[in-house]
Amino acid sequence: MEHLSPTGGATDGAHAGKPDVAAGRAPDPAVIGWDDPIDLDELLGSSQAQSAAPAEQKAFVPEQLTAVSALDPGRTTLFDIVASEEVAMGVEEKHVRTIRTPDGRTTTMLERAHQDDLTTPEQACQEYIAAWKAMRDAGLPVVPEVFVTSRSTLLVTDVKADGSELYGKGLRRAAESYHPEEERVRPRPELDATFIGITSPEAMPAVVARVDELCARAQAHGIELPVDDPFEMVVRPDGSWDLITLDVRLGNVHDLTTMDDAERRHLQANGLEVKQTFLGELEKLRNALVRKAEQDAYLQNWGPA
Image 1 (cartoon, rainbow, N blue to C red):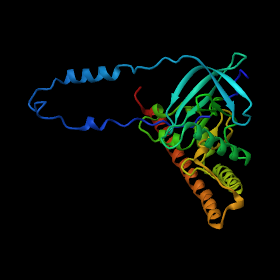
Image 2: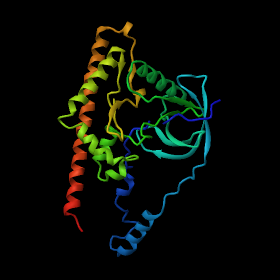
Image 3: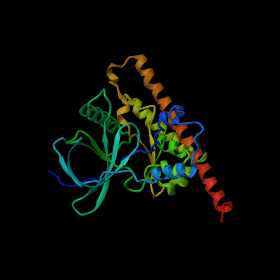
């Protein structure tokens, strides 16, 4: 059994919780007299005291986690997990696990736990791995390593471990929120200007060409990419970039030898829809980040001293 860790995927965008609907109901007049005086200071003080109270959190206990390589089922690895951070992304439960390697270094990997009533965790792992292998074999960009853990979760490469940022649907939602810095998951705002340059009108043809290349490759291998969130753009600290598919389980793999004409037309339409969806997300994200940069510059120049 190995006792090590590969270098570490994560996608990126968190969502704030919705307020309790019951909190919006009017008070019952039989319980609260409408003419009773209200002590505003007492009311505000109580509210502030409640909001200031720290949320109770479980202390993380370091653990060792056994996992089997998705590419080599005979390869078992024992991961030393020394820290953990829960991240709110999508419907799955996800944690960024900090792992100590045998030489004393640390890296991070993303643990994904499937959650729904229709598929067991074991089935979800197998579906993810089947789609991941098909996309990998077709030459589509996916996370380089996937492990199935002893608790039926997936441990995958953390593409943000080297300081990269993911630009796509999740970050677009965060960038358009009222408090973007609070919403971003492990933010790398220092790379926003690089992303804005990559998606400028002058540079955008290179992005479009890469999308076209990947959609054509997927179609040639009978792979239907996930329309809702087909790609993320990975922008690295050195300014280089590429696209990657993270939610591979949402895709679909077809057998080209048994497809009829209607299925082939559907596969072709998938490529067009993926292109339109992803490029639209990039445009909206770029606009949101440009607006934020302009607001920051205005506040820096004209804001209060």
